[in-house]
Amino acid sequence: MVNDPDFTRAEIQAVFNIVKNGIVSSKTLNKETLEVYKKLACSNYFITSGLTGPVNNFVSHNGTASFFMKFYESTSIIEAVEKHVLCMAVPEPFIMTRVQLEVLQHAIEQGPIEDGDLISKSTRDELVAKGYIARIRVKGEEGFNAATYAGRYMFCQHFGTETLSDAYEAQLYKNLGLKSFTVK
Image (cartoon, rainbow, N blue to C red):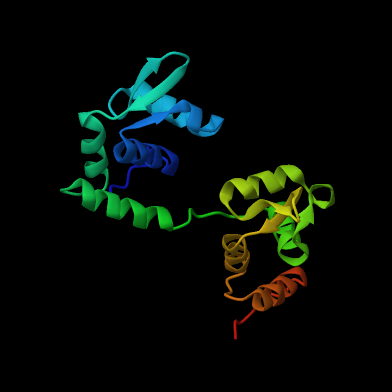
């Protein structure tokens, strides 16, 4: 893949969606994603924006597929799509703050947790955006939160372990100020 710091994962995902679908309606996008599409539409190389009534439609043109193939150093669109799917499966590097770690650990240990019992709703929202916590329904009632498998994985990775028990032990060593911890 071309190592181009000018493009974020979200921008490349937007280009992929346009290549795959041919057209994307702004009605289907959240506010943050819509801004990514608008930014790319302004470049006029990747995505063009057509206006049909009050809704923006983002439409593929010849340069969109060419850029996508060039970005993934591919000779065919199928090869580029395969590389894209593999690249997007690798999580972005993410260093958790202490509060994020605490909220995630709370969700892992106590989940599902009611909104009112959370340590920090804004931090929960950050972790939801990353896919580490999910907003869920319990017995038909909304307003609960639980850690996802990706969240459990990231919690363990934060401490360089593969299991929760090893992560808790590493956390204890770290909190006690001990510098060495060996995974069994």
